[in-house]
Length: 493
Image 1 (cartoon, rainbow, N blue to C red):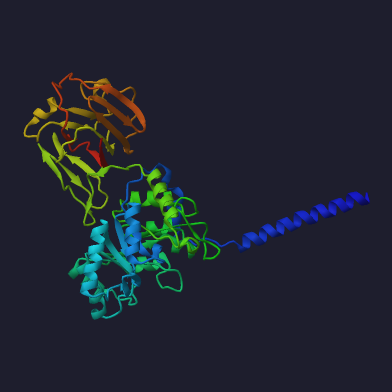
Image 2: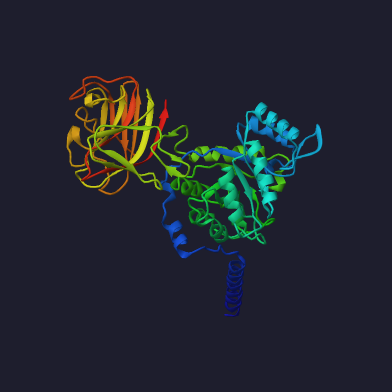
């Protein structure tokens, strides 16, 4: 009995110590703060895994190469295949120019040398910061004039003055963007809400340089911050970190290898149709002498999760609004566009909204939805000539959209010619994703990720013949049950 009692004593003591340690560890673990509860709920309920990630242009924040001169950095970026640069103030220009640094105090002669080096390397400087723009009109104009002369579109800064009246005046005059950065506390822009409160309602050229790594350092969930700042993100300093909290307990790691939810962030930016750069800023001091391996891993990771790699977005934003640039309309009716969401809505008809470039072999993808079971529309492919009459319907294929139809007239059919293998369309009001691949004479159609057409094209039904190349068009049929389209991409093969 005594041995059993001792055994029981040691066992319960051991379990108690483990339990106390777990409580202590839990109490010591830093807790992520959340913005408003609705943003936390949004992140928790959004299925980011289902988002088809668009391709974003990649730039390099030169701070990543802070142990090198600016001219050395340009050569390294050329070797990496990165074409866009975000410069920071204070980086030495080159060993051949002692004491010369990249900043807005450079002489005209030095600016010319920098432009020449950029041209030699095939690079473009697209942003400058994080820089001090001062509080006076004189100090701000100095930075703005420098940016204009260097062809820089975006100035990244953390304005000292809370009154942005002067900034609004200058961004309109110079047509430049001010992107507010968020260094950790004690910086006043550390919290996403603070950035939002400063940019909300201001000129659209004043927004956020969203640094998700610094938000992780400050225990903020960057996904919530990105959503909060939707429509106001002008630049992204993209980082991944091995944990939340401040260094040295946490460090930068290559994209996709940490706790930064990089795929979720790119999915959120895709949902917002963010049109700016993913700017690499790798700050791990342990690898500052050679950050290239980490950069290569980061770029490879993003490429591996990008659905629209090699695609062109042919219905996109211009100046922060969606407009039908490059598109033309033939026939009755029209497509109205929501300038904020980029959703096209067919009205009246029967007409055709067609894109002004011919394609031979291609992959076309978009989302569409029907307002009723009687929604009647279609996607025309290889329209041979500019439509001037309804004759195009006899010389090109239409991928049908009509849920109430059957056989060769149902959604997914090659209208009047080839029926789909199955009905794969979603219920009314839900967004369908369609993928059309036309290579030579072979046509494949996937609807909601199901292969429904796999066919060697040939004339039939109303289609008398078809061309080897032509235009893409979306049909509007009537206003009673209009179709909707969004996220329109094409990839030439």
